[in-house]
Image 1 (cartoon, rainbow, N blue to C red):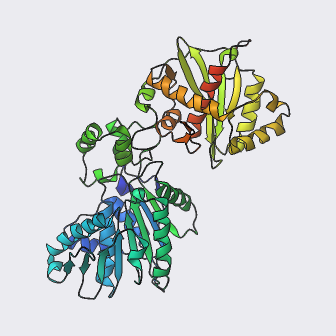
Image 2: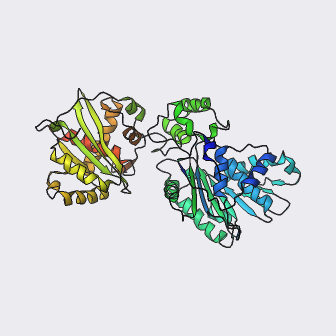
Length: 474
């Protein structure tokens, strides 16, 4: 069994557990790495120990599908190459394939490994074909490791044993679906088949990869899943401007990257969003974050105690109905104050009662953005209090558009302050927009905290104070 203690601070955020009853290919991968003078990192040993487990009676791999996402400079392409080439060495007439953003990128990855092979004792036995249409490493047992462009036609007519798709964050949704569709018949007659996808996280526009990440995270808690999944990424709420936040980076353990390299990347990359995506391994809205979250992060303040007549409250349930949030907004010495009142998973278990209690305290306004999951939650609230909906507020699309713009402008103009809750800062950092008519609104793919904040700000903008001092809410 692999000892997770050897990873130190570089613990995975998600990782499929090893089955101690099944063998794996770690020994052969380590042997090849030694010949090529490559030192395996602890995280790579964990990955190989689980991802390559197989049933000894049939030779079939326990996990036909394997997903891996790590930050840049961690050694993901190296370990996939070692796994595939080690199989080609051990198994005659094997066909292993690698693709990437383009055929050129895949070819360069093959040639990087080929150069190490040629400089090793294996060099006298292997042949490297550098032809543009068919770049590959050939072995004396008639096995080969070959690059191909990320198009389904490239695999037509071949028996495919294992395939690795690198940097899939750049794949379009159609491109990813077509590739998987082409692999199904190509691998159908192969018992020991396996498909790897590997990548640094993408943006909100990386639809296909983001779907694979969601499936992978869910698979970790499913003992029957056919997918193994591994993710090293920065924990929510940590500051990517703080060097200590990068203890999770698995490449730091083996010297593939140093803190000074991360500092340099922070200073030189084209946008903060690209730095967060590449080195924190966090999904961003795009290469430029939607909000100036660094300014927002610094806008913490000692907040006043408001009266209930001055407080507008927004709430939100996210798209998979797994999390919810409630945020308060009020005016405080020329600025708008935000406070995360409550958030958590399984909102059906706590949000209806919380909203009834807040409503009974008579705040300035209480409402949510109008969309399906919030409407469904509202029905649950009404079961507790049949009069609740009469005083409840649901934003129209135009109001949601205005609220999103207000939130963005208040942050950029320094007119917003908050109590520094990590979940609220993280939600602002990863907020996602979508187009609506001539403008934009916050997408419900965003975290619920930022949508609840947007709603609270819009309600505060539209409503005037009423009466009674507030004591229940904050």
